[in-house]
Amino acid sequence: MVSIEVWNASVDFPIFDAKSRSLKKLALGKVGGKIGSEGRVPIIEALHDITLSIKEGDRVGLVGHNGAGKSTLLRLLAGIYEPTRGSSRITGKVAPVFDLGVGMDPEISGYENIMIRGLFLGMTRKQMEKRVDDIAEFTELGDYLSMPLRTYSTGMRVRLALGVVTSIDPEILLLDEGIGAVDAAFMAKARDRLRDLVRRSGLLVFANHSDETLIEFCDSAIWMDEGQVKQQGSLREVLTAYKGHDPFEYLSPETLARISGEPVLSTNGGE
Image (tube, rainbow, N blue to C red; front, side):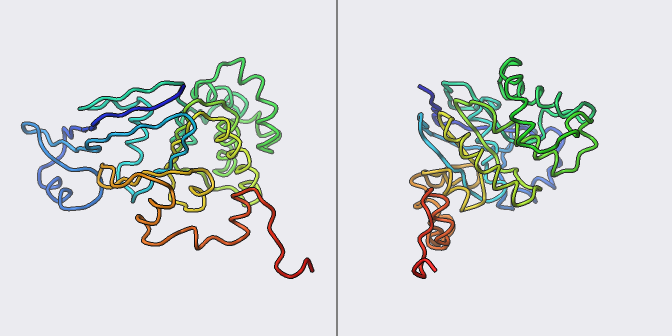
């Protein structure tokens, strides 16, 4: 049974080369965690007193302004950051997808990057070899897959990265926002694969700024603010508190139908 447990966890980052004057200015702002000091070394408390319990089947959205601690929390949940205080326990195989470009080499071919990226995400070489043809067909990159990655446009790189990411079988899927730079038709195709990826995962934590995307993939949410959990609960409840309005009321019938998987009902008698 996959799960993530966090108890009173904080994450601190010492800033060894910061000047006190610039840090004083930063301390006056509202972005990021709180700033303290240990001796003469300034300390940024990126996360403070986080307690969470995420179980198999949970689909959790992370919301909050830039610098609120969402990405740091994802890295804590992935085991990349150890708590400075408190503790955490991760049960299950983690697939952290924080940057679509991580683990890709511009000097080697698309085919070789498929293998490297897959290994980076915890798959075996044998597993990736079975997925190469499917990934190649999805990306629609054709002969470019035999060329070095440095010859690709940004959109082509995103296609390749999405092809690999959506082919894995994660137990714990941690997604950070970073999907874009592709045409609308391809993104619709990618969303189908993302939906299937989420369905295959044991649990999901997804940091995203899009209400529509969160409503499509998540059923609960955590609102992060200044490195702390400000609110946790149902997706609708948290988004309404964070946004100051109910985002479900602003979705079109077509969007709601697509998210629910139900056909759009005609309002003109079928004409």
